[in-house]
Amino acid sequence: MAEQKLTMKELENRLNSFDERLSRIEAQLSAGFTAGHSVRVGSSASHMNQEEEFANPLSESKVFEHGLAWIGSAVLLLGMIFTMLFVHNAFGGVASFVLGISSAALTFFLSGLLKKSLSYMAFMFTICAHLLIFYALLRLHFFSETPVLGNLWIALALMLGSVTFLFYKADEAKSQLMGFIAYTLLIVTALLADQTQVTLSLFVVATGAVLYFLNRNGWSTLVILSIFMVYIGHTLWLIGNPLSGHPVAAVSTPQFNVIYLFLYATIYSVVPFLKQSGKLSAEVCNATVILNSMAFSVLLLLIVLTFYTKSYIWIFLGISITCLAYAIVLNYKIESRFDSFFYVNFGFMALSIAAFGYADLPGSFLFLAWQSMVVLAIAIWFRSNLIVLMNTALYTVILVAYLIASKSIDSYNISFTLIAIASARILNWQQNRLELKTGSIRNFYLVITFFIMLYTLYNAVSLDYVTISWGLAAVAYMIMSAILSNVKYRWLAFLTLLAAVVHLFMYDISKMGVGYRIVAFIFVGLIILGVSFYYTKKLKGSKADEVAHA
Image (cartoon, rainbow, N blue to C red; front, side, top):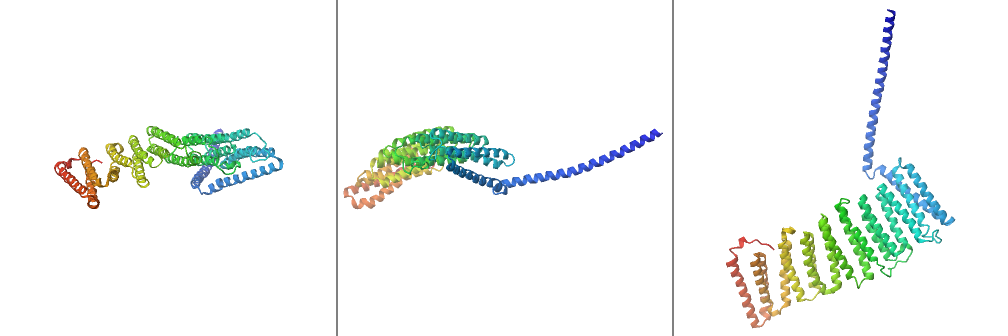
């Protein structure tokens, strides 16, 4: 019994001990849950606040972390540069170079230390270190009365090595800002080289590098900025390269610089294929194409006016052939019609300039008029309404310019008339292919046909026969209307007869001799009665069945 009582007591003690332990565990679990919940809630709120903060570009974090990092890094960089200048003046170029490289190494070290805790400041320190290296290498040869490195090519090689390294780090970090800085330093290096073929070749390399990184990383902003920079760089070379200390003055010889200009434009013209592959948006692609063409045109104009005022025909003829061939390629390879449309129009613009250089005025008017037929054929081939509209506008401008600036030439008048008629017929024939539903452009060409026909006949025949010639033109329109089953040509016939009657009473009745006057009245009267009879008997019954096409 004693043993049994002892056993019961032990059991009771153990139960009490177990109960106490359970109470402590429950208390701890309760406290831990409350603390954990508050931590999670606080963490979530903090994360949400951080997201909201960074979503706002003017948020406190943006201003203090990014903004002050920028300002502080810039100030530090300038301070180091001023220190290097002081050391250079006091102790020489070698000491300045050692200080610059040492400062860059220290900055790289600090960047590594701060990479985890202050990532953006570390990023800015990395950029500063690269700039210090480039500046230290630059001062070995340039902007110094007693350069440490007397050999230009070694200095350029070292600077290009630092730029290449920066491009590598930019690609590794996927940083478009670092890529832009590397591109800028490459342009500066090219200008400092002050050797035409080296400078312009480095411009081509820089342009190719931009397209490479666009394809690799999608750096579209860098592409847009690079267009301005490379063409400005070429312009600086063209005015004597003042960055190297030369006075501003046009270079004396062309030195094949136009070839490099063509290379820039050609490299940037690849962007439609990158758009097709999804590397950049349509908006950026179109902006690149337009800005490239504008900058190319302005700089080419400067070069032509400087060196090629008497031999620019072949330059623009080459541009025209290249652009038209490229437009054909784009038409079959690229879904967007803007690209082929743009290069077609740019090519024909260049061809127009070449024609002007070859035939001058008024000879180029005839060439440009017939060129519009070629443009219309390409528009139909490409199924491009935009090219049709542009061609119509250009044809009108050429016609108005001819009428204002040139005396009347019968062959030119006839050509403009035939082109207007042929254009209207071609557009009617291919209206489904071009999807021109309204027919407004065809009607416009017919209106031009009406007026230019009157003008052509007025200048082609003697004043005594103007009324008769206009009457014959009305007959021709009626014949075309009957053959084509087209009511619009009957309207042309009616309006032409009306013009003949007006001329008959305004001029013929008072200025012509009696014989000519009698012939004119009888002839025009017979034509009017004949047209009326033909319309009443032959056409009125079938008018409802005609399909009127311009």
